[in-house]
Image (cartoon, rainbow, N blue to C red; front, side):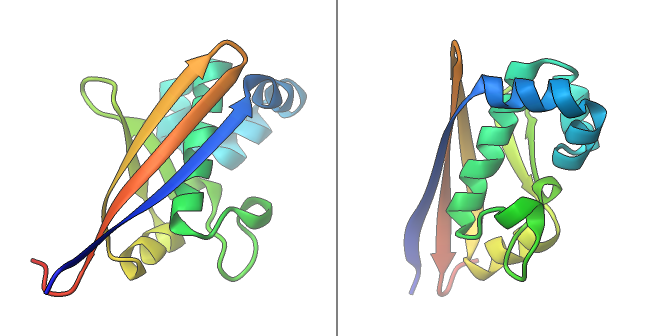
Length: 137
């Protein structure tokens, strides 16, 4: 028998937080948080970096782990283990790696949808996952 449940995560933040980190730490900040593919997509566009930060946070909340000090600790996931890329229509999509992928598998997550929205100084991201356990294919 299949059991379906839904997991959610959400994050709201000020773009100025990412802008300040980008100004202060530059490439060191970007390379610590974002995958090479995310860096290619965003470039130095602070709003795009902020949107991906919020999306990564939303996914980490959905997984129930958080980032706990940038990926330290037994149950934490690393920033780069959650990648927010985009499809051919520029819809954001989630790709998980390493411990994030393991956690998703343990939770029987089959799909994660992500939505990112910007309004001036704020960015919000919402993540929703469908989880099936039981006799699924």
